[in-house]
Image (cartoon, rainbow over all chains, first blue to last red; front, top):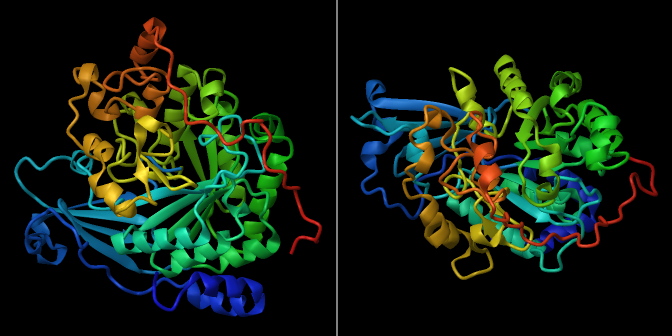
Length: 73
Length: 411
């Protein structure tokens, strides 16, 4: 479990609604980070596939909505 | 919801995948190569982690919808504890899963629901939850409106009580629209109004579109599958072929309407594909985790045949996603069977695995709602009894008793 956040702290926050409300705006903010490579990958060397390394004419960029995949509600 | 530019990226075997949390859009970047497969073909081989997944928090529900995918009603005593649920979210964070669709049953009935949502969002996992709206007090609507990277989907199956309530229960239309009013009043922004298209409401799509827009929301329509309680009502509720053509026309006329990519089997009706990947993502880019931790290929195939494991097992969810026999099999190249020679195959890709499975049709054959009628022909000649969904959690047919409203005045 992530250090500094525990189930007990969540339970304590529920017993103390005022404190929980004060904490909520901070707790609900998304961290500003870019995630790196997954720990397990079978893709082999990845540097050549790094988006930043590809020239514009080399890259095929395709976009879809997060809603555009079948198999979720 | 605030406009932000937070983006998560991760490398995959095919290239780079990025997710813009604010715009809710995925970007796939691949190196141009000779004979580069299409994006759906590339993704059909699976990813190192799901892009997103559906997580049913509880089987408990205070409604008893006719077509419920998970046959919900009463809580299962084996449901994941709060601690197990937090541990599961930690694992999703480690795997860089971008987004989780939380549902049930009625997920807001779990006492730890709000805590789990806030935990997810504060650990880099975007959340959309589905709700029947019955627990949406003004206070909760305000709280949700103050949270980043949270989306809400209110379920409704008709533009009026006369259409909706026979499917979802007496009073459910009023409860859902009350929730929509409260979300709109709280300034939530463009939440989703989610409709399962049936024979009863297929003629109300324009009205539903106006209803959603009236609350500042976005309409989302999805396909009725013969899964869960839907198996018993599918023959009675599934749209006719003429209605399905109307659905396709409606979607073509309203590109703002979302579908969860659930109508790609209608692709051959048009010259251009509908928005989305237009392919089955089950076990490849998405999956479902049920309230007791069982992992299925998708929410529409909650049957032992499509159960990949349980998150409580050694290796956890990541072990199942990466190494399960079922998901490995789903990610193998599929030839298309008897559909491969059809002119529509590139559009429909043989349709929905769940629809075929629960109607007893072969998985390498046509969808029961194939737009060319090939599925109907096969159904008519098939003597096999279709498989039944996993046992429901509402054996008596009685949902969890929760009164609409509460003893206290709504916040």
